[in-house]
Amino acid sequence: MTAMTYIVNGRILLPDGEVAGRALAFHAGKIVGIVDEVPAGAAAIDARGGYVSPGLVDVHCHGFMGWDASNGSLDEIRRMSEQMAKWGTTAWLPTTMTLRWSVLERCFAAIRQARSDSLAPEWRGAQVLGCHAEGPFINPLRKGAQDGASVQRPDIEKLRPWADVVKLMTVAPEVEGALEFIRAATALGTAISMGHTAATAIEALAGVDAGVTHATHTFNAMTPLTHREPGVVGAALTDGRVYCELIADTFHVDPMLFGLMAREKGDRLVLITDSIQVAHLSDGPHDQGGQTVIVDGIRCRFPDGTIAGSALTMDRAVRNFRAHTGLPLWRVVNMASLYPARSIGAEASKGSLEPGKDADILIIDGDFNVKQTYVRGQRVF
Image (cartoon, rainbow, N blue to C red; front, side):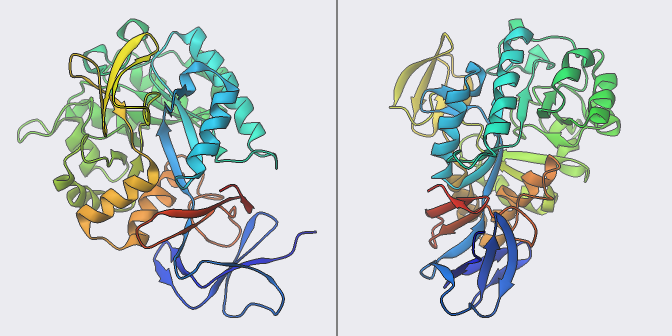
């Protein structure tokens, strides 16, 4: 039987503030609570004056360093899970692109297996919670970096065998059959995100009424906010039922808008990476699934200038958002942990350092540089 472990000498980040001068206790992979005193001789981890943070939850990540969830490779998902733990991510949704359905099924099968494998002690990285399927039921008019030839009409019978693993799915609510699909998918337990959409604000709100609870990389690949037609952006920002994803790399969305999004969305703002296969490779052109993507620092573009995705990591997202808003660290961490977990129904076990939840814990310095990462009580970095 494992002994109780205590993290001492740190500022503990909670959903409503931070606590200093106390210790965080965990046992058998679960958070026990915050205590005033540590028993003599107990196992203790010294945070050295840094922060003790919940692990980060990325609900939208395709790949990086040459690996990609859309390759349908269990080994690549494992490697990504190991690497992202170094950046503070302790749970994630491997995210597929718009592909032929037969290819997507191969990806879903690998992610389903990875979800099971990630519960084993030998898994040394972020836990796989399921899949985010970004398409293929989108609008080709707003396909962005997605493959237009693979866009399909919504079909609930295709999703049904995979609803246990597809925890989040990006759908354009205005396309034919989408509202019926959204209702049925929601009933199966899959959260629906509106994205890659040319919907009007009214069409977007019809999607929300049908069950949409999420907006995919807000501002990007959707109709913009204007003063006479608020578009999907306006609907997503103003409707309290919708979680808004944000790629906080300072490129996809101007950081001038970070504070506005925080004020409008509150506890429904979700930081994501939307990182892609060529992220963290050298600057210059790279092949990604037969397409050329040019990496230029934080920018990933196709040769025609179309944005292909990001090179962001979750720890950098937290740093960027904090730097451009001045918000307390605990509030920004919620956007990268508790709120994304809640957006996919995983808040019972993920997203905060509350008793009974998984011991997914980070020890970080004042600049949110990750020093140690624990997943379900096991140190993985």
